[in-house]
Image (cartoon, rainbow, N blue to C red):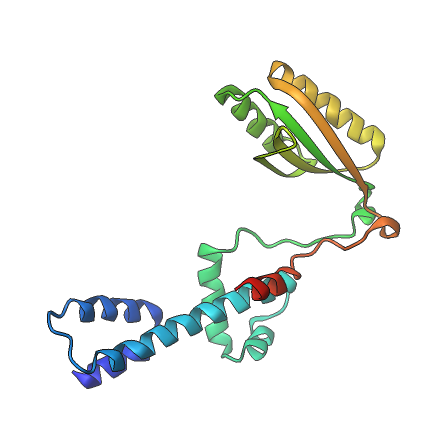
Length: 208
């Protein structure tokens, strides 16, 4: 029995959790209970920490090879490959890059706040319009400043943004109650902190 427990202790997370469930089903846990259980909690915690570390490393620079990341985290390349595949199923929505917006011709990054009628029709209209508009990179419902939705979009210039707003007003029509905007230039001169996800690792470490 002890040999079986030790084999499970060094298995992967799935076998670990399975063994714990079986072990807890025993009617009379023995003195060995804590000896069996401890390695499992330790291995699960270690796996979670490594998975998060890998996720943050990919957020910093996803173009690096699994071999490069394996050296940073301190595990083998095949292990990183398996971990990455798990993350792609559970925690990674997409791989992308953050470009130099001015090189693409986008001089304005806009945050547009919208107040709409609180009806299913208004919600359906907002989602459809945002999904079909290529300038919008993020949109979500929320609360604050008396508004219901926030949109983040990129535009070549103010004329382009003005056309964007005119289209929004036309498409939302009677569902639109109020609209406010905040425009940011994408050039380096007025950028206080460049857009990046790499900062989140430190924020997570400070709150965990």
